[in-house]
Amino acid sequence: MSTPTPTPTPTGTPRPREVRTLADKLLEVHDWLREQLGHLRAEAAAHLAARAAHQGPAAPPAPGLGLQIRQRCLEFCDALTFHHTAEDEHVFPGVVEHHPHLREPLARLGAEHREMARVKERLLALLDDVTTADPEAFLTEFDTLARLLTAHLEYEESWVVPVLADVPFPPGPPS
Image (cartoon, rainbow, N blue to C red):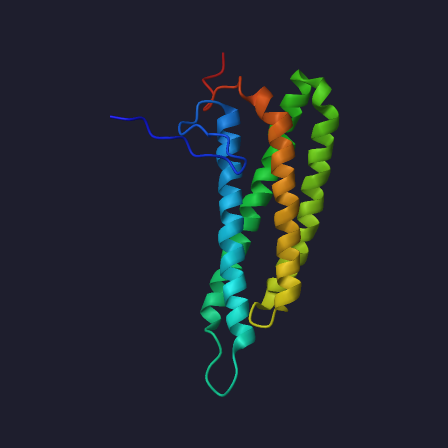
């Protein structure tokens, strides 16, 4: 019986299937965020295109789909906020304590978290009424968030993953 091939990263590097370290867990979360970005972009673009193409007396695309997209965007943004808050408040302080040479890259990552939060708020404001959201403005903000997040994840992985590879996950009992 053959061993399953690990899931590749966006850059083609194999990912472990089993989470054994905090680095593995971070990569698992980052891969999920990337996957969700792709799904959300495709769903939003399809819905907004259908809405834009609607003509005549027939009913426009069901608002339910737009509301589903809004809900998925809200859930994604909540997950992203939770992830970044956990890094800022729990992961990064411990990393910088043991690896002071990472202070500058971690400060940059924190600044990127704040920048993405601002973009996320603009995106969510556009979703206040998804049935009337300007498709071009929404997709522009979404693509800005996706571009920032993708670059951020790659930068974070280059600096943080190597030091988290030595931290077991889940952690053992306190000694």
